[in-house]
Length: 581
Image 1: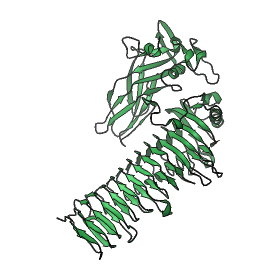
Image 2 (image 1 turned 90 degrees about the horizontal axis):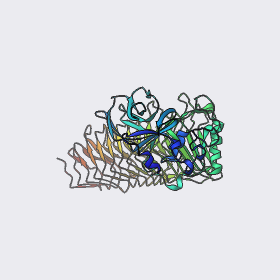
Image 3 (image 1 turned 135 degrees about the horizontal axis):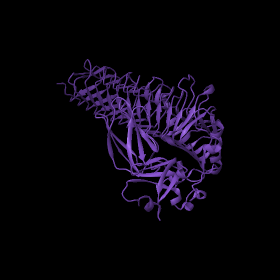
Image 4 (image 1 turned 45 degrees about the horizontal axis):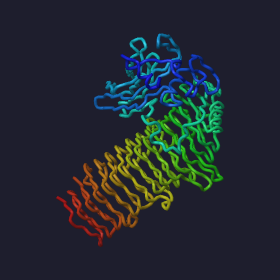
């Protein structure tokens, strides 16, 4: 019988339990277990429940929800949970199938979309609970103290209604790895479970050597590493040199790697010509008490110019690292290429959340769909696009509470697009000081910046940047710029406490354009302030403020709406077509 026909062939129930004994496993990964009900501790072997889940739909994955989504309404609050199916394995459970009682079973549960209420102002933990005693049914279990229901169950994620954020766990996309190019990910080859190399997930055993051995073994055969559910402590920094074609995967929040930062050495470090290494779906915990600047995951070149390429950190949770949570860069005068961080959650790190480009820089890659939270005022930049980084896409990340949301330092031709930045201690987006010749042609597009303590977007270095279609609310100053060749177009600035837009330092803003921006809710009539030369200020709308050229010359101030008035001081500046009442 076909696998899918068998799984969906039980009448009168949405979900049911099956044993691996009912399937012909000879065509799958672990044929030695077919029909035996036995579990061997030999290398590569798993229990029958895990074998079954691996055979069904996703090689190498057990305990997952396929196509899992949360649709959260934070105003109610409530969540609509939807998925195609869930696969849950459980060694200890028993079930009856085809008239026989069996142990080591896997459960496949077809699920419809369901809406459930949430507790306001708290973190809500969401589980799928399977009940073998009542028609093999399933239900959702939600609580605020992270107490799971009785086994078998699957943790689906959490919704924090106090911060309006949610995090999925154990999700498997409908099209697995749909956003990852095939040259970044190895999904074939042998599977190496770290337990088969001596790892113990009790939170105290030092698993440094076991993890090293498993990943090095995968490097030798082009294989993959499994971090199973458990709390795997390791004491030493784990250093890998020039490994390639390795996938290291966990099972979401159930797979924990824990490091206590002895000597401030950091966590995972991949050095030299690292190629096509992917780390995904595990929690990586640092030491919250440390003052050391240890890094959670670093992917770096060496002094001989051997650099990493085509690597990915995806869907991991990194917490309490004293330094950068994730960092990558080249060395020896050569840039790293196409390294990406996608869909990670980073909490309470002591330096930068994600840092592409320290050292000798990077070319290409993405920083996308990450959540970076700083509840304890530790993090410097949420994302720090650093020295000589170029052509990096920083897209649709959410950053809350860091010192600076996104910083650009001596980097060029990067795109900062669609990010949401909230409650930073300083600026939302900042092109920082440094060598201005290395900071140019960055695009800052369509970002939303809410309540920064400083400026929404500060352009303090470089030239020829594009600042377009951003929304900035509740900043001290909406946009402040003192560099030449800017294109500031179509931005919306709401309730700035000082100025909407400031263009400062005479002579340094040559050939800049500020047009079609909208400024409202200003304080003390301060709309757009100019102390610069050769600026075109055209077609801007200020609902309740002025335009004030207090310095500079050769500016064009034309066709703006400024109820507070237009003041021109430059001898050669031109003003016309403005509406001031």
